[in-house]
Image (cartoon, rainbow, N blue to C red; front, side, top):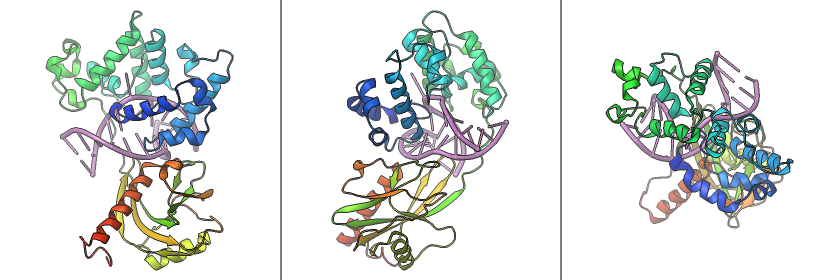
Length: 338
DNA sequence: AAAACGGGGAC
DNA sequence: GTCCCAGTTTT
């Protein structure tokens, strides 16, 4: 599940850490969702973590007390779709079903010189059908892994190594001399920009984090209080007043004007970050977040590893620290006042 | 059928 | 900047 839409190199370290912490199905099922999310922190698509956790509980609680061994049963698990069910069923249990990831879809569309738009579900269904007829009864897992590996190593999105490809004589796209034209995909619209202002509030060696609500981006993850700033930038004084009022918190905004971008698939986040010192604890957390909804809870932490956070939250803290160090050393005299 | 859902690396 | 990654679920 970690591998869904995520490169192998990005996953390896997470996978190893995850397995050390949860070596068995039961250990995963017994853990809290927070604990599972913490190990997923930074990997993205956090729904996968919750689904894996749910799936583990379903499996551990079932009569079998083990992982289902057929495609038909596997695909019933939350977070397990056609690809994942096919990969597990074929590789682990030798069932002759296909496993179409992005690599395999690229290989197949090239072999067939398929002009259909791969962004469309209908095209993917068609490929799934075709792939089902190609899977061998013997060693289907090896076949599936070979197809994925072919896509990952030779039949790459750009500059495919057709000369070394074992399927070169069967490939229509290569015949046509334009393998890079496949797969055909409708261009995505560009991601809208979202402007936010985050405030890193420090008190007694701890940072103030708020928990995002259910639904939407970064569901149930913790982050620094973040305001939306749809129009113009907020001045430090405005930021101080707003978080003061909304959190019932006396805070002194110290640094200012750290800017950073965070590119997501369908949003382009533009953050301004302020560092602040709290004088008294928050009374409430009635803070609308940047986007729909309101925060659910607050918490002071000495370390971000105490709670599940998104990648951007670590990035923000890093920037604030770098900014403070730079200022302290006076390397950049004019960081203020911008 | 289309949109939502993260983040990083390659070019 | 753009594209894509060992995709799935929701609207």
